[in-house]
Length: 331
Image (cartoon, rainbow, N blue to C red; front, side, top):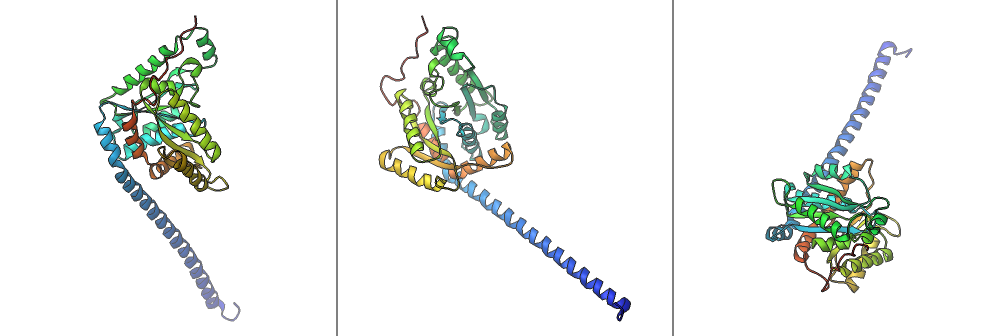
């Protein structure tokens, strides 16, 4: 700055300051544009979901309107595969799509190995579902031993207790329930030693079953067939399956499993319904996982078809003479 002195320094300062502000302005502009793009994308997803809800809401709404009594759906399947999440998402979808009001639906986990789940109550409450029953029969440690020794009543006693809880749910609140979801704990035959397996409860309630299947191809198909047979043996209709927790990439990616599993049922069991395939959800919190899962469920699962098929099949037995009587009390 020797030659220009003060004016050279002033020119340098102003040019540097202008360049810095220009860079900052460009960064702010870029961030604003990215935020607007994200907001536009979210708005498009919301419009898509609402359009799907409107499109799918017809058959299920009509079926529920024509139903003379509450429709009961037993959700069963593999352990640790997200059955409770599917129950929450299905009820949320029914409410969000306007098929039913929150006061017209209810949730029950009639037979459980766990204590009352506050998480389930919390997530259902977010969608206005407040009529919840958990743990009508608790299969605690040594319960089966106590039952077999004659110290816990008979299988029929336990089934009647569950049936009474469901009947109570039907009339709870200001409106009679039109849809009750029964969440099966663990796996389909849990509780069989005491006459309260998923299939035996479903048969007692006259409900149909929806299976939640696992990832893969051979294992997914084999376990689904096994579970269908178990319910059918007890005279319970299985309306179809949802396959959950599929990887988004890799050899057993969602798209690859979807293609192979769909092809199997197309070839060998064309009458069986596959309502959707859902990915593994990754998020930072349980609330975020549930919210993301519900939105994914609404966009990827044919939930209206589930309700329609439930209304068509409830109460129909698959085999004459079933369900078999519960085991007699020990002598």
